[in-house]
Image (cartoon, rainbow, N blue to C red; front, side, top):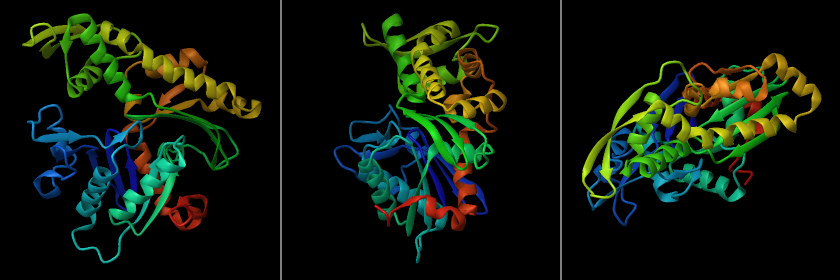
Length: 336
């Protein structure tokens, strides 16, 4: 199976079946322990419903931060739950697993991924860099002698890569992505309205009225939270123009990473990109007006991949179909 182990969502693809699981990367545990609630069932959607709403005895945890494992034991429990959900409770032989990872992670962070997968029941684990998985999932001709450029904006990291001949020619991984957009909205609500809101509310604002560039008619939405002065619940209205202003910093960081990568590219590859353009993948790429802003900053055509949310997972599934042919190019737990 192929696993897109994301900061916000984990997607699992099975060879020959496509994507079989898409759940939030959230686990509910008893406070002060790593014991998962409900006999290990409080994972994914069940746990996400609890984010920001738990009593004192329970904590809803996101065990990945900035695209890497921040809580080893809880990640292991989450992976074990997802693998068991797909393969069934009885496993005589664990599955071979391809896990996508950010291109900029360290050897220690890679080791944590291997260990979590091994202890969750994987027979053999292979690591695949996210830009490659996203490019395959987006249907780019990454194995051909022509430049393909992918910008994969996830929850914790943004991967910018230029590929040719089935490998990365130039890439940059920055830890600015969808979560930073949510945090920018939370900071704006605090600063402007003295209103404290949670992550889930910030994400709703981003999805409903967030944009990177003006998109025609401006809109607004009602936001509920806790007044920072009185401490009481309160609601207010926020406009799409304000949200766009709040999102400008993380969006600028992403665009700067794109332009830096282009500036370091070989002239022949840069020439190919004039025709081939830039493809955006990942949940963060769904932000309205982002392709417009990248187009304006680079002068290149920026387009959204088909179903950007599942690009990386679909890429791991296609990689699985060709695992015998390509496995020597992957890092696996026998190498480390």
